[in-house]
Length: 92
Image 1 (cartoon, rainbow, N blue to C red):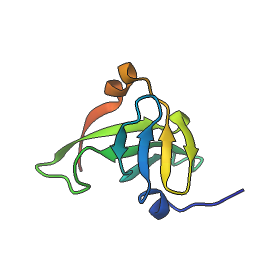
Image 2 (spheres, rainbow, N blue to C red):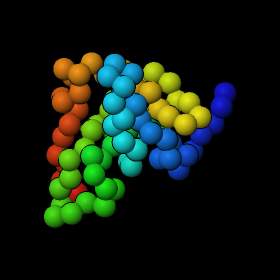
Image 3 (cartoon, one colour):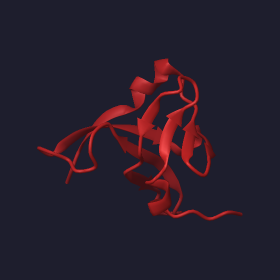
Image 4 (cartoon, rainbow, N blue to C red):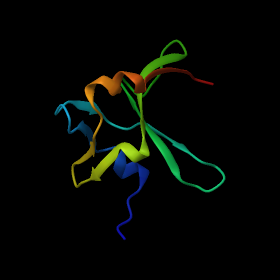
């Protein structure tokens, strides 16, 4: 088993293999506090620094990840479903 830190994951581009589009770099992760599993990765469409309390981002469920490589994270999301993962979250 190969281990990788979240700091290393933040340095990898996320690429949708369905379209070839580069979605960005992961900035945050949602983790299940009960069992420690990563549920999703959050990719801001702009900067990791939110302005005015809101930001637009992609929330990619962990099960949509096809492969984590040396330079990139490959996800497989059909174009029709990608917009469903765009969301606005309020920063606390």
